[in-house]
Amino acid sequence: MPVHILDHPLAAHIITHLRDRTTKPATFRTLAYQLSLLLAIEATSDIETEEKPIETPLEPVTGRVLAHQPLVVVPILRAGLGMVQPFTDIFPDVSVGYVGLERDHVTAQARSYYCKLPPLAGRHVFVVDPMLATGGSAAKALSIVKEHGATDTRLLCIVGAPEGVAEVERHHPGTVIHLAALDRGLNARKYILPGLGDFGDRLYGT
Ligand code: PRP
Ligand code: URA
Picture 1 (tube, helix red, strand yellow):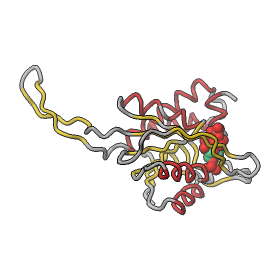
Picture 2: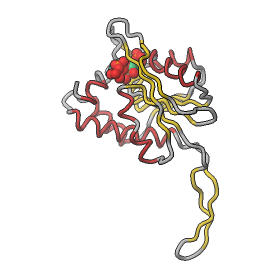
Picture 3: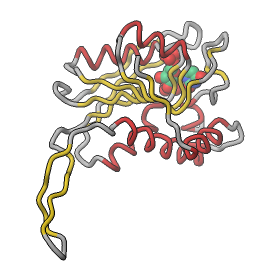
Picture 4: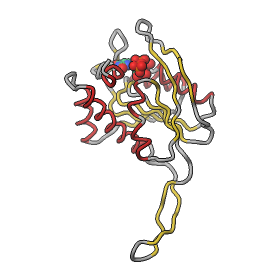
């Protein structure tokens, strides 16, 4: 399966501060924004452009602009919300859909509690969730967007575990995954190691 891992000194710098247990929610949100921006740029490096003739103050030139093929970003609530703003900042025409999933604290199984999606057929759909642990949430979200017509789906996560990557591959072979870091594995409670703890709790100070 194509797994792309951010390879940039800035990404390493940001993720180290995100992992740090002393990082407070306000800084954590800023760092999450910055890392998600790097991921969004990387994951959209192959989207279509088209020619556009313009005139500079000096002469005519044919430049390139994004082709009219609006993107859709789908955060998995709640923590995925922390990865949306980079998309809305750099792609003004992006649509946002929502999938609400919550992991049971005992079984670690993801339960669906909300779904609100724009039309997805024929559009690039970016499912975003900072943590890819067992992969149950991501696999379920990918199934939901496909049931709603998505055919071109990509998954963007900040930290992934090998178990999560394997689970997504098992249910959705060939899905392109972009990660900022691929960690060692999961602990007995299905938290990523070394990871950064509970992303949603740290993002929202809960
Ligand atoms: C976290 C995280 C993912 C999920 C990953 O969400 O944001 O959605 O766990 O775990 P998995 O790969 O084992 O499914 P959580 O269920 O804690 O909900 P939250 O976003 O509301 O905090
Ligand atoms: N969800 C989190 O927020 N962190 C983990 O390590 C695993 C699931």
